[in-house]
Figure 1 (cartoon, protein in one colour):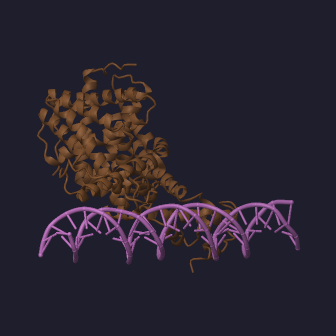
Figure 2 (tube, chains in turn green, yellow, orange, purple; figure 1 turned 135 degrees about the horizontal axis):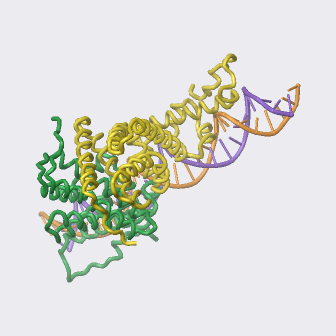
Figure 3 (cartoon, each protein chain N blue to C red; figure 1 turned 90 degrees about the vertical axis):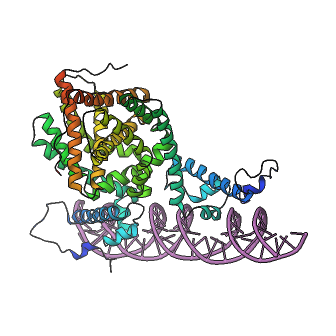
Length: 229
Length: 229
DNA sequence: TCCATTGCATACCGACGGTACGTCTCCGTA
DNA sequence: TACGGAGACGTACCGTCGGTATGCAATGGA
């Protein structure tokens, strides 16, 4: 029963042609999306190792032939899921950033958005929990670098620029790394808490306090210690 | 050739008896340690999924029978490795903490020790990279809670206590989580950097700056914002 | 000396990731 | 309209690996 391709069940709609390439291409893209959809669901629920390819292709009502036609293997399929989840998270954060202009409030808005994202079970499982292990830390870092981490870097740049400090690129990256890790870990604490709302409030208070420390140093005109180069 | 037990090759030393139980117990403990040793090495090098039990028992010169006699399965073996790596890291950090008394310098010493630990490839791979995925986040958190994280919590308590703030338990935990995540992420940046020494220096500068922010707020007598409870 | 227990070795099973190959359908071209 | 090729799968199969069942020999207490 699940052995027949879903495409044959979808009749052609003659009135709406050519919006996404030929019919073949549309069908192909549809099965590919179905595979990623099911994989995202199962990976989130049972983890990477706990999800068999048979279960994925069964859920998508195709066979392994289809899977290996679109992806080079299980890891590549996971990577596709990973990228989609990451991209969506990044978009959500960027959206909240555009609504603010002042660096300090922008930072707080970004923090709030990140805390929402990190409570999504899919993001937690796919990106935070399984990501480093499945992709390896190198590929994981590369992916993060141009999505969620990029957002944090933007915020940090803005905040640092608001102070009297003139930091080189690497120092900005270091600060961004630190805050990114802080927020990831804090997000985990929030997501794992019994009362997520209260936990999120505590995190916002704590990081807000740290930011206040920055502001205090900025107002006092405190310089960074000398960098041995 | 690797099928014969190593124990038979070790003759009894009659002059040194009873320091670790009977001969049987000594042999048993020896093979168990050999398994954990080899597992730690292979897990570090090839990861959890990339390491087969055959490779482990081959390296330890025993068979799967021995492995399954001592451990309930692959995951249990990993857990044994994990605990040992974590315990050693925790010990290293605690040692550096005892050498300092002032909270602020204690914090900086702890940071320095942590940055050293996190550069150990074994710790990175076993604890940070594979830990959450293999153990699941719940068990991972439980383990961290009573080892490395406990150290960070101690430091944070000391620093917070040095200020004019009176924070409840949960708020202290929140701050500790934040700093723990910050240092983990920073450690990753250090370990993955081309010039680890320079990167470590940048991290120390950055976190030192954050701590300075705390000190500034403490000197100014700034209170934490109201907590909605 | 006896024998139950411990500590392992051996043989084997099922599941899973991956591959080889066959087949059907669509689409451009003559 | 006929057709040939390529894309998009389906099917059967293989090797590996985690885990299990069972046997056996050494050990050490009685």
